[in-house]
Image 1 (cartoon, rainbow, N blue to C red):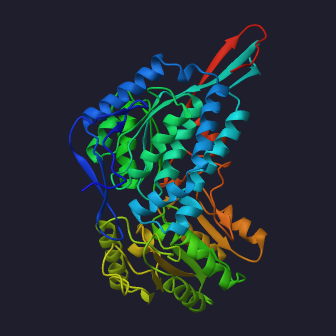
Image 2 (image 1 turned 90 degrees about the horizontal axis):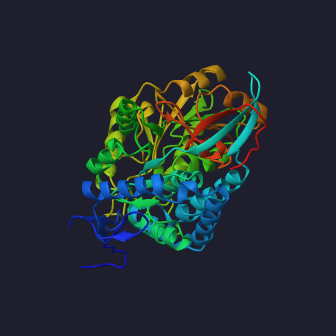
Image 3 (image 1 turned 30 degrees about the vertical axis):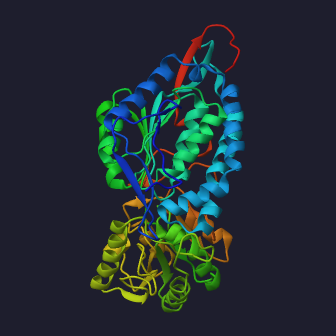
Length: 489
């Protein structure tokens, strides 16, 4: 049986080509557990063809040799086309991975387009070439040149968001790129591929080959790849980092998190609860930046924990395409089982279950659903407080004073995100300066695409977004000149 979302080709070198094998990926709805589409499963041969096209385009094609302004024009056309398809993109993502359509229309689809616009502004102002007075006399010309052929490996939870965080800076800097989407979420990249072709991205510049781990590792190890850009688990990031280290290959790794939301005593409880419905369980809890540890003073622990449990426990769970849904299914059965196993671990560790628990939500006999869960009385040494669960599970942890709260927040192998909630903005900012994470928020959390995003410690290496994220796709060249030089591009 075929569906309207089925595809039979791969994007290799910005052209549709037949796959090397008849293997297919069956995309299964996390809500109905039925196949919604079949697309080719990329093989090692397909990946080799994609890398060869990218290598040829970088070494001999026009794209790296265009001016930044010419590349900006192409990406600007892509932005216009993308903006017209936001609703389609949101629906496809919710269909393939179960994100609530409300979140897909708020973030999954528009945030990638906002990235394009932000990177375009950055690229127009970026110092592609600049001259400096030399320390030894004369002048120095400093150039940002494209790093080369990029391998981009995004995850399934926010597929377009993580694809475009790599694709757009790669394009603007003059790189060519091979993208390996997760097998759970190949459908959104087909819509993206159509837009890339329509925007006029030249032959060879972009390839998109969905596949599993074997194909992904082959891409990472490929000697013709100059840089790997990966978003995913810390375990996978360590392996990719090791491979890149062996080959002295550039890499940027955006990895896991176990972020803390610190609630100060002067915080408004209603505001905190409403905030946690987003920062704590956004995308049904399947978000690396989710703040799943909630730190509350001992004096207010029981009061705040109960309010959080009431708020999170009453969120609407159901069909991801229903606008009323706040918590959708997990992406796959294995993820449903993983989250439920952690809920059971929390009970075994002695945490107090205030909302949710293992098992399916009532009335949902089909689909990979879990119950939004809140634990209180959690010790930060417990596994549910230290390990990334990637589901709608929050742990409320008591602290003695502000110093203790900061200590607990920093007592993690991760350092990706975090928030502090307080009526005193300056008190919140003081805490933000002390918590060792790459991004932070005072009474809110967002990723501003004008600013760098990434993690401390085991949460990753490198940064995305902002001028810093664009620079990750360049190499610096210094040219020493005896006489005056004219900066150009």
